[in-house]
Amino acid sequence: MIRYLIKNNFKLMMRSATNILLYIVTPVILVALLSSAFDSLMENYETGDTVRAGYRIDAEDADVKTQLLIESTKTAAKEGDFILSEYPGADPEAKILEEDLAGFVVFEKDGKYSIYENGDRKYEAKALDYLVSSVDERIAKFMLDAYRSDMPSGVEIEVAHPEYMEPIEAADYYGIVEVVYFGWCAIVCGAGIFTAEKKYHIGKKLKVSGLSEFQLFLGRFIPMVLVVSISALLTAGITILLFGVHWGNPLISALIVVLSAAAATAFGLMFYNITANVVVTIIAVFAVVWVAGFFGGSFETYMFSAHSQTIKEISPIYHVNRALTELSCMGHSSYTGSAVIYCIMIMIVSACVAVAAGTLRRRKGE
Image (cartoon, rainbow, N blue to C red; front, side):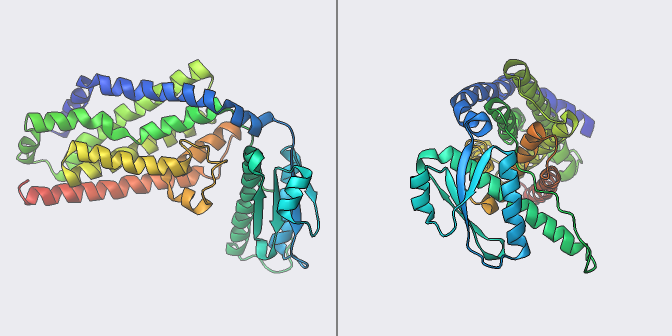
C-alpha cells in the first residue's frame, strides 16, 4: 500500500511540472546574476593587490593561546598575501588613516582580539577579519582536543598553523550556495500533492486505509526527497556546464546536498502537518529559510559578513554552505561533519513532530 502511495504522490508532483522546472531554472538565473554582480568583490578577495594591515600586542606576558594566535595569524597572513606589520602602542584608527591600512588587529590577553576596519576598503577589511577569526577558531578547536585527550604534562605538542579559506570565484560560491538555498525551499515541489489531497479529499480516504501516520509521512517524504534531490543535482550540473562551477569531492558534496534536501523536506512537512494549510506552510517555511539563508551566506558571502560567528553557526544553511564551499576550494572542510549531523538532526526531529501532529489531528477527526 505504501509503495502505491509513494508512486501516486510522485505522479501528482510530476503533474505540477512547472513548479519543478522553475525550481531548477530559477537558481541558475540567480547564479548568473549574483556571480556577475559580485565578481569584482570576490576578485578583490582572491587575486587583488596584497592586503596591508597592522597589529598591536596589548599583553605584556602573553599566555600560550595569545602567542599561538599571534604567530599563527602572522604565518597565515604571509601565505594569504597579507602584509601584517606591527605598530607598538599605535592608535588603531589613526594608524589606519596614516598608513592607508585595510584594518588593524589588537591582540589582547587570554587569546582575545579586536579588529578595526577601514571603511573605504571594507572588502579587504572583511578578508582580514575572516583570516583572524578562522585562525582563532582552529586554535580553539586544537586546544579543546588537546584538553580532552588528557595529555600528560611535559609532552611537547607540535602545532601546525591553522588553515584559512583559500580563494574562491564568485561563480563557484554562488553556484553552490544557491543550490543549497533553493533546496531548503523543497516544500514548493510538494504543492502538487497537497493541492490534490485537498481537491479530491485524498487525505480522508487515506485515514481509513489502515496506514499509520508514519507511513503517510513516508508516502510524502520519499517522493519529495527524490524530486528535490534530483532537481538540485540537475541545477548543479547545469551551472557546471554554463558557468564552470567547481564542486569539491563530488560524492561527499552530493551526499550533503541530498541530506540537506531531506532535512528541508521533513522541515516543510512538519509545518504542513501542524497547519494543514499549504499557503501558511509555504509562507512560514520561506520566512525561516530566508532568515537562515541571510545569516548562512546565501546572499552576502559569509566570509565578508559582519554577523557574529555564533549567530552564523545557529543556521544549518551556514554549515552546509561552508562545508560545500570549503570542499570546493580546499578539498576538505571541518564543517562537513557538522553539516551532516545538523541535517540528520533536523530531519529526525521534524519527522517526529510531523508524525505527532498528524496523529493528533487524526484523533480529533480533522
